[in-house]
Length: 413
View (cartoon, helix red, strand yellow):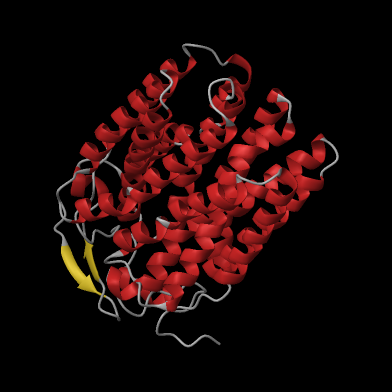
């Protein structure tokens, strides 16, 4: 068995080297990666699947009530990220424990929705999905420190496209036992995945990659490492933090509006389900594509391009005259606003450091909750023409805000 040693790079970052993933934890990191992928595949149904259910649920609740329920779900899901990161950093919550709690709550969210409880769905399902989301991303980041953005994109993409079968089934086969069966299936998948989840030792580094050479290479690529390890309160004093927060909030508002109102805007239940499934699939697969692009052109440029694409997609959706135009607009919307979350992890670590990366990400991720409130207040109360135009403006405004990003402490040329 190999013996672990510690080394530092040219800026003082610490690496634990010498151990393989199996030696460090008793399982391969690829196994953990696929477990996280499966859990995210199931947990995302609570968000994207609900949009497909809105046309069927209108006989019980009004559209504004349903939208506010989805907004509350989003607030609970996004607001859970920071507490989970803090508890995990303090060793008060294990990855398996968080996943098992999340499994119960995710399943309970759909079960309570089936019993006619919107608030139960929003609070229980939202907190449960937040536990799963934060735990899966945090664990994958620890296991793949040399390829954070690509692996995060792979796992977080499942959160979107995993709901595609549910969305299509809900548009055609929705019935009394549908939500109960879906809730049980989600709970089982997340619980089994949680049993596999395990964190590596702190600062673990894959032995086949020399960390000092990797760190020097990182100093010459578009996505350079942070100049300082920022604590959360220090990061929040940087203007870059708030430019990024605003951009993510606007993107979240646009994404949530599309998710809830696209099926209603289409009018036909089956076509609406297909359009929503297209949006979810484009969001999930687009995160992998955008992650690959960002490695080559830089996270900031990729983030600006995606938000601008999401903003322009709103005008395509509004003025589309046929099914082809509708599906193109849905694809662009998914590729745009939904892809910013996979980039957010990498941007946070590269701007504010890795030591407190999980907590800094947790605070920035609450921008999704702020976006949900913006969508509920500004967009949901308006007619479709005004709302789609406003959503387009918000998406483009998010691109403008993120265009101001610069790495704290490094002059921007």
